[in-house]
Length: 421
Image: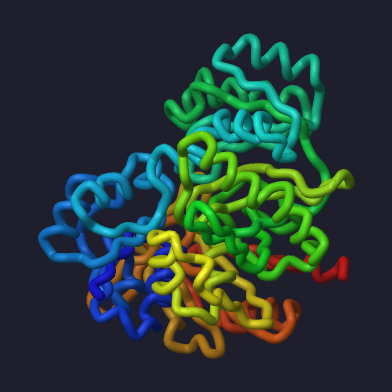
C-alpha cells in the first residue's frame, strides 16, 4: 500500500516509524515531513494546511491511504476532502474534530451528556469575562475556545493573572480568532493524565496512559509549551481509574458524538484530572498528542496500519490491539527561548552516538549530511524499559551526546511521579 502521513513534527515521525514496520506498507510518504522523517519516508513539499494541494497530490500519486495527524487540517476538513476525492483517510471529519476545534462545544457536549468535567462559563464579551473572574477568585483556568498550538490555556494563580490572560486572548488577540471566545473554568486538583484511544465510532480501544509535561522549566515552572516530555504508562492511573473512565468518559463521549450526528473515527485524546471526586475531563483533542504519541507508540505491538484501517472501516472490534508490558519516556530537546523567541538553523551533533533509544525529529531539516534545528521543539529522545524509572534513566543517558547551540530541556521529566511511588 502507498501511504501518506500529513504533518511535520515528532508525532508524525513516530507515526511514520510505526507504519514503516508494517509489511503492507510498500511506499511511505510524509507531507511536509522533516529532516528525520526523510530518512524513513519520502517527504512531499505540501503544507499540512493546504487541503486542495494535499488532495491533489494524493490523487495524482495514487495514494491508497492517508493518515491526517495534526489538529489544524482535521478541523479544516482534510479527511472530508480526501473522502470526497475517493481516498481512504484516517482521522475525524471536521464535524467531529470540533471536539478540539472548539472548547466551548466540548464543554457543552459534556454538560449535556453528563460527562464529568470542571464547572465553567463561556464568554464572548471581555468585560463580562473580567467581572466573572473577580467574582470567582483564583486559582482559575482561562482557555481560548479555538486552536492555539497547545498554548491557549492559562492556569491563573491570582485574579490579576486571570484578568491578564483574558485581555491577552480577547483584546490583544495573542492567539488570533481562537481567543475571540473564552472558556473560564474552575481549577481542578489532582494528578493529570492523558489517555489516547482508537475508535471507529462504535468500539473504543484505550491505549496505555501517559503524562505530558507542559511547562517549559523544571518543577512545572514557566510558560506552557506544546510539551517538554512524556512518560507512559502513568503510575497514578490505576485499573480502577481505567474502569471508571471507560464507563463515565470514554464510551459516553463516543456515544454522545454519535447522537449529535458527529460520529468520530480516529484517535481521541482524553486529557483528564484525577480529582478527589474521581476522573474529570480537562480537554479533548481530535488526534494523537505530541509528545505522548512518541511515548505510547513506542509500546505498540500491533501493526499500526491494521488498526488505522479498522478505525476507518468500522471493524476495530475485530483487531487485537496489543501493547508491550513496559514503560517509556520521551525527553524533548528544545531550542533556547522556546516557546517564546528562539533561533533556527543550528547544527545538531551527536545523533550518530545515541544508543538504546529512538530519536524522533520534530523541528529539524536536513542540509546535505547535516541536521539543522528548524523549530522550537527539535528532538524527542524516546526510550523503552521494563520499568518507568529505567525508561527515564535511559532517555536521559541517550540524550547526553546530542548537542546544538542553546539547546534546552527539562531535567525532571517523570521525576515527581517517580518520587511519589
